[in-house]
Length: 234
Image (tube, rainbow, N blue to C red; front, side):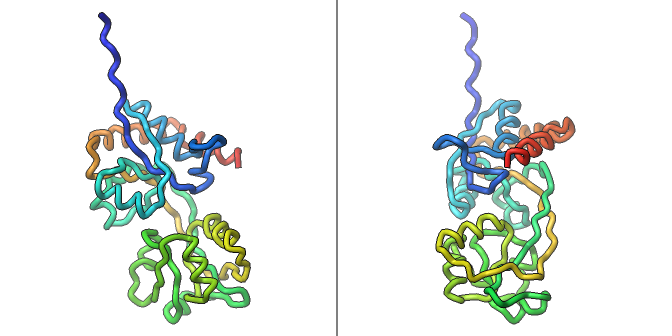
């Protein structure tokens, strides 16, 4: 009898909407975007396959630490996270300036003003070494964008630090709040795009295999083509 081909190992990856890189697909329960396609193609070549789970980022971070999820796409690198994840990539570098939301009729013109203000930040989000760790800043933390904009509307703080403008604007639309604007001051920020692979994963041997596939895809120009294809679909 012919030998049956071994079933590919299943890796679990967490989805969260970050269009255009990660977005909901055209049919219920499906996901699309450049980071979806890149990972699925790399997994196919590495001998594994992905099962996606739609999950809020704080839960993804908890499960990454515990090994309940193998991969979290678009995980921003910092030294603390290297204790729980191997960073695969970077597969690309994107321009993601850190901007600030302020109350309508006000502005932020220079960094010094931040040292005398209250800044709203999102739990678990890594903005930059300055925003996250400078002791001169006063921060108020919210669990997610919904709570962040509600607290801002209640004037709990002066500014919101923002990386993902689409996400924060949607949160404002959802509560019907328009009394905000973007400040003049911002920080230029170039962000490498990584996949975080859990150090507690039971399939840890695939971290090196996927890193190799990513490097080959970069050399062949495949990742650029995938990103270009999704930009044209926007």
